Image 1 (cartoon, one colour):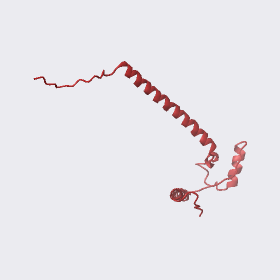
Image 2 (spheres, rainbow, N blue to C red; image 1 turned 90 degrees about the horizontal axis):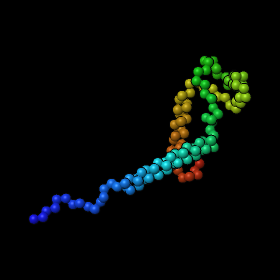
Image 3 (cartoon, helix red, strand yellow; image 1 turned 120 degrees about the horizontal axis):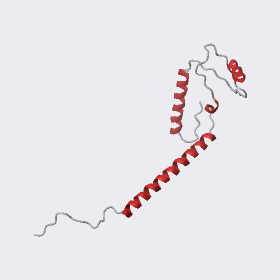
Image 4 (cartoon, one colour; image 1 turned 180 degrees about the vertical axis):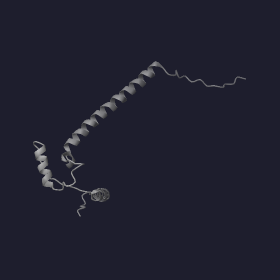
Amino acid sequence: DNATFALRNNCDGATLEQSYINLGVIALISAGLFVMNFTIRRVEVQFDEDEQTAQDYSVAITNPPLDAYDPEEWRKFFYEKFEGAHVTTCTVGVDNDLLVNALVERREKLRLLEMRVEPGTSLDT
């Protein structure tokens, strides 16, 4: 009676050649990820520089005097304190958290509507 309990295949196991191939693939993937990350960051900066928003030119004062409600007074302050300053618009917002939150909610709902309607549909209100 000749019984076989284990089957040996013709695989050589882990060889030096396979380890070099694995190392090369890891190096290639790592280099690709590095190049992709570098390119994405460069394009992101370029996109941000092309897209100008009011935030790029806005100044928020967090601790103004309690009686500083006059925009002309703020305009005068910026011109006196900062050489070369240019004030296009000056808005004084006092305790307007509810208004800001409502505007943010409105913008989010408009964005959801834009995604649901056909492209080019006017949502002017």
